[in-house]
Every structure is written in C-alpha cells, then in structure tokens.
Image (cartoon, rainbow, N blue to C red; front, side, top):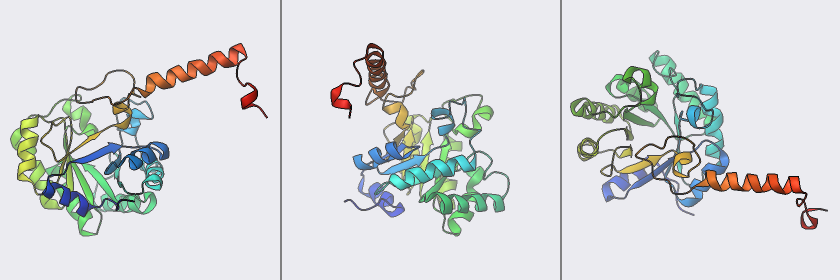
Length: 262
C-alpha cells in the first residue's frame, strides 16, 4: 500500500513537478473509491450544501454538518490526505472562536487539515492556527462564501490583489492554496512565485494540482455544468437507467425471480 499523503508529500510533489490530484468527497463510499483510485487529497467541501443538500449557496452549512461528513471521509481514506472546509462564520468572527472551531474540527473529524477561504483578510487566522499545529489549506480567488459580496459566481481577474493574497497566505503558514475561478495566466504567475503548491479549480493548467467536485466530474450532478468541469463518467444516466429497469421488473413481476429468492 502507498504511504499516506502528508503536507510534506505535497511540498515534495511541487518540487519534483509532479501534479497533485484532489477531489471533493462527502461520504464513505465516494471517499473509499477516490482513495482506492490513488487521489492525493480529499476535500470535504462546504460545497456539500449545494451538492448534497440542494441549497443555492454554501452559506447555511454548519460546523456539526461538516464534522459529520468529514468523519465519514476520514474513515474511508487510507492514503489520501483529508482536508475539512471551515464553514461560513466559523472563523471570521474572532481569533479565539476561529482557533476553537479549527481545533474542534481536527479533534472530532479526524481530518489532517482545515481549509479557510480568503487571502490577506484571514492571514492572521491562518498564522494563529499553524502556530498551534493546525495545518491550513488556503483558498483565494472565487471564494463561494463571498458569493453575495462578489455579486454571484464570477471569475476573479485582479492580478495584483490575487498575487498579494497568495503571498499573504503563504507567509502566514498555509501549506498549499486553492486557486478558484482565476484566468490561467494569473494562476501561472502565482504558481511560479510561491514555494507552496497551488491547486486549481477553474484556474487552468499552470497550477501544481487540480481539484473538482466529484459529483460534477462523475456526471452525477444535474443542470448547468461549469466550463472548467470535464465529465469522466455519466453515472446519473447509468443510475437512472438502472432505476427504471428495477421499476419495470417490479411492476411486470419479473423481479424477484428464482435466483433472487430463498
């Protein structure tokens, strides 16, 4: 079995030019499949509010919900590094509350690290967490918790602000940074100027790694598919076809047959 992925593993991968493959996961079965496939990082994103709960934004997700889902993912992961998303207003209010919630997250979920959205504005929180031994994955660019401030899910193009955010989170001690919704030329500049890995989602090829929402890339989600998503399977179609076959066989009396009866 491969060695577990750690912060040091990701740093070595950047140095060696080896790309990092990350995915979201929200439960035991999907985390187990991703882990068995060799995915390096499993992020239990607060995107579960939209992907699993059917909400329009991530803002309503609670700490209890994040811990519940992260525990399931951590139980499944044998080699992948598990990172849990700090939900909206769990770290923005005050330093003591941010540290308390981050510590609780690691203790109760068995995650290896937490993720914080924001750049310079949360650098002090990142620094405080890393100082007490809590690894932090930063997240800049299109940060979904700021969707109302941005006026929607919009590509972020302010080169100087994004570069400054990236430098601030690196200086604060983040072990890596997610770049979301950023043009490839800007993400390339950021990646070349940082010593920590960059993990892109809608940020182009130059990043040190990539992350996608598992339900998007496996063709499970319905509705709009973002431009940056490549669908590697069509599980929604396959599952719906199987469900219809089951319905038909129950209604026409061909299931269960003798081979499925005692």
